[in-house]
Amino acid sequence: MALRLRNTLSRRVEEIAAIPPGEGGQPKRIRIYTCGPTVYRYAHIGNLRSFLMADLVRRALLYHGFDVFHIKNITDVGHMRDDQRDAGGDRILVQAELDGKTPAQIADHYEAALHADESAVNILPAHRFPRATEHIGQMVDLAERLVDKGLAYEAADGTIYFEVGRFPGYGQLSRNSLDELRAGHRVEVEDAKRDPADFALWKRAEPGRLVSWPTARWGDGFPGWHLECSAMSMAYLGDEFELHTGGVDNIFPHHEDEIAQSAGVTGKIPARHWLHGAHLLTSGQKMAKSAGNVTRVTELAAHGIDPLAFRYLMLTSRYRHKLDYSDASIKGAAAALDSLRGRLHALGPAPSGGPWAAPTALVARPAGDRPDGEVLHAAGHGSADAAPFPRADRADDAVAPLSAAGRALHDRFVAAVDDDLDLPVALATVRDVLRSDVPDDEKRWLVLDADMILGLDLHRAWENAAATDRADLPAGAETLLSGRVAARAAGDYASADALRARLLALGIEPIDRAGGEPAWRSVTSDARSG
Image (tube, rainbow, N blue to C red; front, side, top):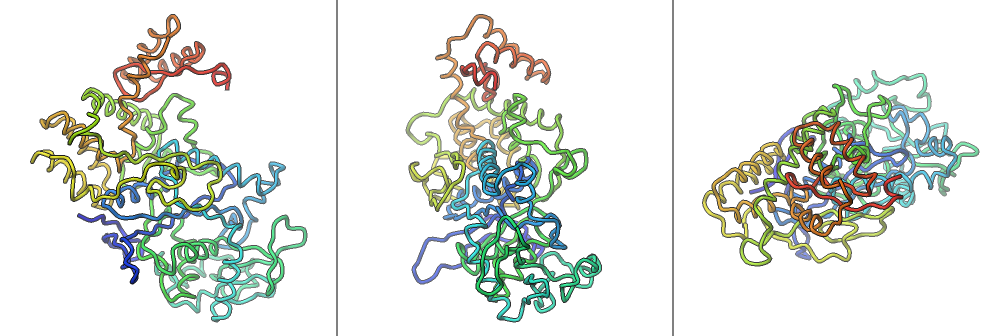
């Protein structure tokens, strides 16, 4: 068995394979570069869908026994509001001016929020989070090499432009021709360029600019958006690596320009495989701040919806398909997740030892506000002090003594995942496991094993029973909890929300983990008011 994904570059579904290691004989490693956020605002769930795609790929590769090394950049400088015309101003500087803060304060605040949001939906933190401002030297060096090779030039206004006409492969990722690109530009604002399709590598700093960096060759300036990913992928993953991920809006111009920059100096397309996820929609429109239709994952929790319900909802659609998000769809996903947990809970907890002990869970631990350095644990940042995660090919060599029927269900699940991440079929297979005639121990093991990829934290389905036994409920709370469970089961979320508010007033926060049984935790007065 092998994971196969659609390669945007070739337009084919291809196996993800490690580039053969050198003579050092290192274990087969898959290196992944994910285009991370520009940290000038909160990430919304549409952004998280793209990052979740990379998380699912990483989990599937770990499930197949690969050693995975994942980089996700943090763009904290250099992203223009109109990238095709290199215009509009640096987004972080604009937001800093609006908020009356320094650019560093803006970047740090929104980066910390991103890590918290990703943790809420169980996205494994990257092994390294390089920041653009920490790699200016590498960007300047790359721009100088491109100029020296005749692929870039200094314009009259001091901007260093990549000359796309001198790179024969330009347009191969997006399937854009240079004639089409030229026709789409506003030539009147691009007098400094030799060609309207040329893009900025480095820009001269205007007088009084808040953030800039000195260079020996071009004076003070700052990078264009695209340069950072080429510089950082080369620094940490080498001239050629296995997999590059991002949203479909990254295909052009960002990833097209990244290929041109990197291949221009190395002679190699940086990634063998390019993976892109489709947009998340709201009422048929792309979710975006400019459209005023964004939802943060924190808003789900504020309305009593487990953030992992969002992860469940994303599993119900292929990553390459657009998905329409609505109040009805997220509530339906929450109910479905409750049902799945309830069915699993009814099987009873796994034995502590023996062949049917629970397989090791792969859990995203909080990365912290500003993760620094490199963590090589399989689960990434936040896991430096955790026990090593066992590297094994769970796809081809299940350690439990599965029956013929259990093996068939296991193989069906893996085949769905390997088929370009067909998670809807994989999720349906998990439900088929719970409806099957295989013994309960086998059902439980198969579901928990599958959750290494699904990432729904199903191993926590039995935590609530212990919490229930420990809690001392105030008068009336038990009735409210039972009523809320019944309201959620009936789909009456307005009543469930009202009951949740009454419980919080009593100092009790309901926990929506396992269906069919009330669970809660005590909260302080500060938490109730905040």
